[in-house]
Image (cartoon, rainbow, N blue to C red; front, top):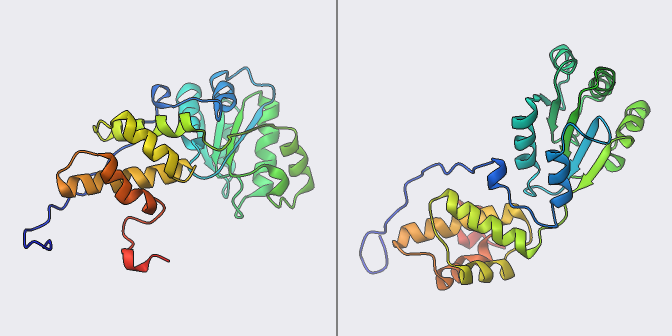
Length: 236
């Protein structure tokens, strides 16, 4: 119940799928080199490509595009067994979050050897480059250092604005350019923060049956890094 005694409109918990095709990828100088390498497959300078960037930087989106193009086999870094090695003999392989502490180093070493021998390709995503992964197997570290490594830089204004527009479009919501500019100047410079902010702003607009205005955006932009379920009184 609202303060005025009228029942508050609560939004339905609908799933909003984020489109991850090439047409949905926003390309700016911050991620252009990574996108170019993904698009240039199979003409890579090395059989192994590592995309490094912070959480929410677009690595998974690029990996999804590459999988669609290459028909890659998806593998987990913590379980590289016979099925993965067999697949690598005739098709590319994708490993997300390759810098996990639970990494199967022996399996990964054998996988890279199979990839090189079969002349296929391996794409790995991670938050950082192998030098800081804490790799214990020297031969594996040597193989990883020979990879082509591409860093996805911190999002620039153009990328942030493009992603804001895209995420609202995924929800079938139009947002005016001046509101996009307002948000771009004030939110944390990460794509994960953009996603949180869009979720919160869309929910608030639904609750109030309002279009998304600068005034509405101003109410939530300072909370864009909070969980949707976190009560405001718990904010530190």
